[in-house]
Length: 375
Image (cartoon, rainbow, N blue to C red; front, top):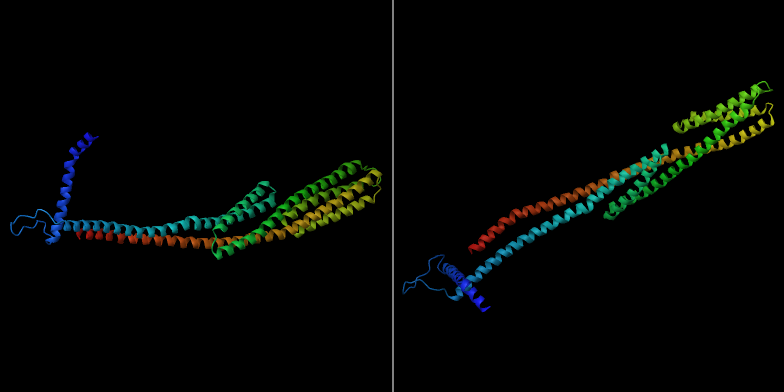
């Protein structure tokens, strides 16, 4: 180990001595420059005329302090500039964070809620028209999406205006969904009633065709009259079904009147049929026709009444959809757009301030560093 240390001293010792000598001479030159008005040449001894061989230690210490103070000044100036810039960048970061984490999600949630409201309305109306379960599935999906975006909006809404609009949306949405449930249920109930009604009409037609007309003897007593009245009843049954479907599509009072006329005609023809000479079998089937027709008329009445009530419910449903669309479009979305614009302008102003500070601080740092170097 001693041999290795000796080797290092032998190798780097002269270099260290040279560096120490260079530092001493530099400090001496700076000290002499300060003492003799900036002259680089060393001062001459007044007696011998020889240059000074060394500088007093106190002057060397003074120069060292001056160099240290200059370095500290440059570092302090740099740190001050960095601190000022950092404060500006923090403001920019806060503004961007407000845009990304709050304003943009609020705006997106408002738009998504409006899309879901429109989707629910379209799904309900399509389901009422077709009964296709895919439209009902779409309604359920749009409901779930609306709730998700509503929760997200409420979590980010901090101003009183945002919260008031959100409360307004909640009240309208609850009424909107309640009415949509009523309409969806109405369609399901109507499907069951239509199925029962079709079965009744088909059974009436089958009784007349298979149990009365096929057994009427044209040569028997009242045979032609029985055949004629039964044929008329069969025609009325077909027309009742046709005009009922037409009325449900068009909602025209004239078509409803045609249903009522066919019902009246059927009862009159059945009554005329029973006045003829009937066999026990024909009498039993005529009674079955009368009983089944009464049940059919009850179903028709319920279908018509529910259909007419649903028209008012549909009108209210569409009005609620429009009210929700107005609140979302002219309230939430307009406010979200305004808040997003304000946040963007704030970020732009903060960025502009940082840019202006850079144009001032960089030259200031360079001039300050130069001044410290000169002093």
